[in-house]
Length: 590
Image (cartoon, rainbow, N blue to C red; front, top):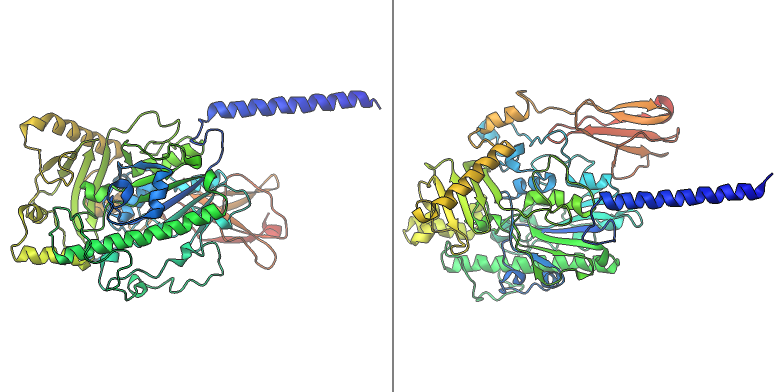
């Protein structure tokens, strides 16, 4: 044998492989834009999401309560004062975040789609986005990310089991495989409007945040209602004295009842801050801080009356902080307009993936961020049992609102909101004729068809400029932009909810169902298909003794399995009922 020649060809083959590898790497660098991490690839991404959150924290100019953890995050990161929800309430907003689509374009804007429908003679339903839509976490899972949610969903549709590796009170990045990149979401409930109800007290400390990842931890009362979770601490201030001076917005009366609710707002924020700190400490303890992009934001504006559910800035605007690894851009402010529909395409851009064509938002970070957003858009429809139809568009300075039911007053008697003492105080003073002209605006019996506000000089949106001749050009600009937006996303504000359901269900009387998966053998490998276009397919391998993983793998291409195992799989298109779960023995069927 000619060993020198064999060695020569081995060396030549090795050189060829090296050249090919370098060529592929260069091609990838050319095809995919650099991330905020420069040469550092596949960053971890951590979302810290609180509820009903206005700009009531020191990094955004309100120093009423100390928030050491959020303040540190801001000092080491970037603050974004111009983030806007697509709705003034959580479920539609979360639908936008999850899909990158406007809720009113996919049947997700009525709060909620599965409740208060019986009273209106309607079936419970789910939003039905186009067939190619996936929850953003599923796209990240396909790219190898370990995705967890702890633990609120509320997307206006049931998330397929393929959306998350784990969505539970124990979900945590610590349960991932070694060195696997993660996308982890933690939801904090302390600042929710229900935190203002009486009797007041902090919820049971959310131990899922302190013991997360340990599935053996016994979380007390984890299935209890909010009411049962509240502690009898009504007269024991945790963070602020009761006589603290508050900056009460002009649309609320300056009374003891309102001051007490403001006191609750800030105490709840301080408690939430401590929970944020617990998660950040876990990240640091795990040595992951400098390979993780951290987002903090709220799911819409503040919890108080004339904030939550409305599409004034008080209901839409929520503070956001992003900390980049190695404190890049630390201590700076980014004033660009950002909408919740921008989150999904931004996440993909951060990991070097192109945003999906169906996404209606645009990335606000990274090389795909080719141009700044000019406008944000929002919509309000049904809230629980009460219905209105309002659309809004805002640029950097002006807000335009179009009221499709001008004959109907602004105030909606929503039973849940009327449990807030400040709401009860407003109604009492209204009955007694003691509200001033500003506070009475919300209770007008009719609305103007159009409203225009200069949000720079009139941040509380109290002085309507729609009839002012000096602002007709701006009125026309924003009105035209609204028409363009409605047409682009296919939003018909006049469409009754019953007709919306018929449209989502393709004129069927019942919710469509995902077809059962079909399992076949392709060249000795398992192939799974589904006749429902766009359905996600999940599968799990069951070993001897029925041992299986907790999460469902996402089927993408045919795969091999051992003959002595079982396989179970299902299919689920968003907005459809999921298929039944099928279990087979590989030795018998494949």
